[in-house]
Image 1 (cartoon, chains in turn cyan, orange):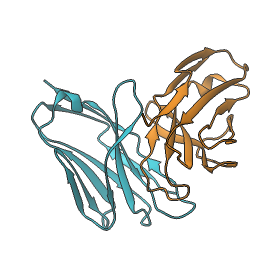
Image 2 (cartoon, rainbow over the protein chains, first blue to last red):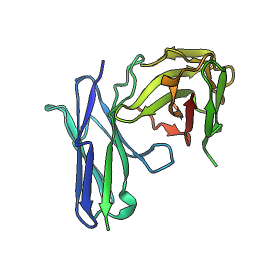
Image 3 (cartoon, rainbow over the protein chains, first blue to last red):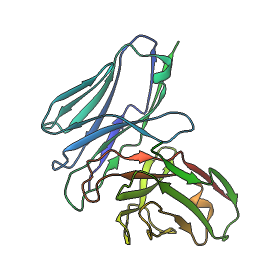
Length: 113
Length: 115
């Protein structure tokens, strides 16, 4: 089955700096890669996703890049703000009938004011 | 408001006392799922359902039961809870019944402690 790994497990940045969170996956059939943000006391919420037919996607201060050859994808947050502090989960999935969404273990991002 | 609701939000119980955590969504989603979140282990899927009366095991189904008698509800049942089921539980739903490439909407979580 799919194995998704995130690194590092924790990340601390100064407000205004950029943060990059990396994930690797094992199943070459995976073609959908979402990122979820979990704020304290809440459930995870989708913030951005990318499909295998594109290499990069941006949404304001957030971007995701995908390297299918190397089987890794990354979340980039620019101009970080304290409200970006949260746990971030990457995930991978294929679209077959028996596929499932596999999550990484999560990374805790802390943005220092 | 489109949402996934879970009840209770917090529960402390004792070993062996049957309990049910309810989950309901108002988005007419076909797919529903239960996850547990543990420190260092991330989100692990317990059970999922692709439609009414269709359920299947996830990665960690032992000790849990589910049912899907109505499209909107997907309760999680612990027949005989044990301390290793102490965890944070999330229910999630998504539009598609088979494709795993739809946005999943998560509930607020249920923190369960089994003494």
